[in-house]
Structures are given as structure tokens and as C-alpha cells.
Image 1 (cartoon, rainbow, N blue to C red):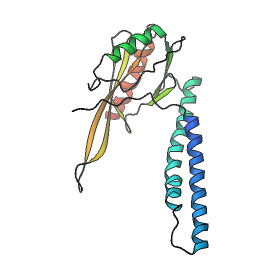
Image 2 (cartoon, one colour):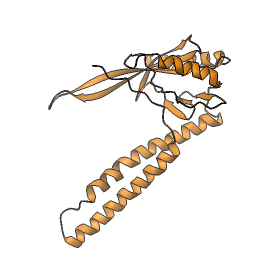
Image 3 (cartoon, helix red, strand yellow):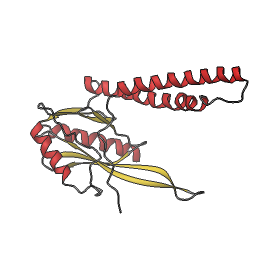
Image 4 (cartoon, rainbow, N blue to C red):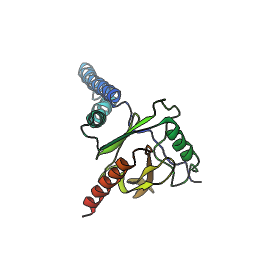
Length: 218
């Protein structure tokens, strides 16, 4: 039986996440240092603290750098420096968008990768686009034509309210046996609501990403 399609609210709280990962990195370095002291004191060949210390010290900095980059990207979008379009979807329009998405069967390929929140501010939900991603409320979705979940197409959907739909594809290795690994390609739809008075800006976003895709294929 097919499983429910994955959904996300985007990358949220990158500042908090970067701080936590920085602390985990420091903890990993401390564990390694204590493990080295323990090994020298006991003249042993290893310490139980070394493995978790190495795990934290090697992996956490990579994720921390990712969130630090996201902080810079989101900051540029919020300030308007890197924004190519911005609009606010009123609460009543966003509710219609959320209700329409909820009617799609959970196992359908048309399930929206973006998972709308249950609580909608009275002032509505702000949407900000750059040529690198989209910020929906407090959730950031990177949009790349070359890595991660790659954009394969983009179009305007004439729904109520209207939306911009991206087709995203991701290829990941999946073990098929004890000795073989196959690359499996998964596709997702990412739909972003458009305010009724932002049709022109939405068209500019679609043209921008179609140009990005055309540049990749050229």
C-alpha cells in the first residue's frame, strides 16, 4: 500500500537551529578532548566518549553552515534586498487555499509538499520570492534547478485563490539488496498561494523561474 506523501512547512527558525548545532559542535569537541584525556590517564586504546564526540564534531558543523546560509538568504528576502516579488494572502483567501489542499487524497501525486499551518494570523500570510527560493509565512523553501529537490517545471494554476505550482524532483540512493543500490527518483508538487491582487507579480515569478530552467537546459 502506498504511503502518504511527505509534506513540510519549510525551514523554520534557522537562527535557533544554527545556535543549537553550534552548541552540539562545541559539545562534540569537548567530548573528544575528555576522551583523549581519559585514554592518556588509563593508557588505553579508546574511550566511549570518542565516538559520539566525533559524530557531533564532524556532522553538526555541516548542518550549522547550511542554516547560517539560510539565515543570510531569508534576511535578504525579508529586507527586500533579494526579493523579486512579495504579497500577503489575506486570511480568508488562505483558508480557501488550505481547504482546497485538504481535499486532495493523501497518497496522490498532487499532494502539496507545502503543509499549511493550522493557525492563520488575522493579517494573513506573507509570501516572498527570490530567485533562490520562497518564504511562506515563517517557512523557507529553497528552489534550485541543480541540487536538492530540483525544479523541473513551474506554472500558474488558475484556482481559488490562484497559486504557483513547482514540480520538484529528487534522486536519492536506495538499497535494493545487501550488495546493490539503485537511484530512485521522487517527484513532488509545491504550490504557493497567490493573493488576488498579486497576479502581475506572480506572472513575473513564473517568468523568472522559467528563465532559470531555460538557462539550465541551454
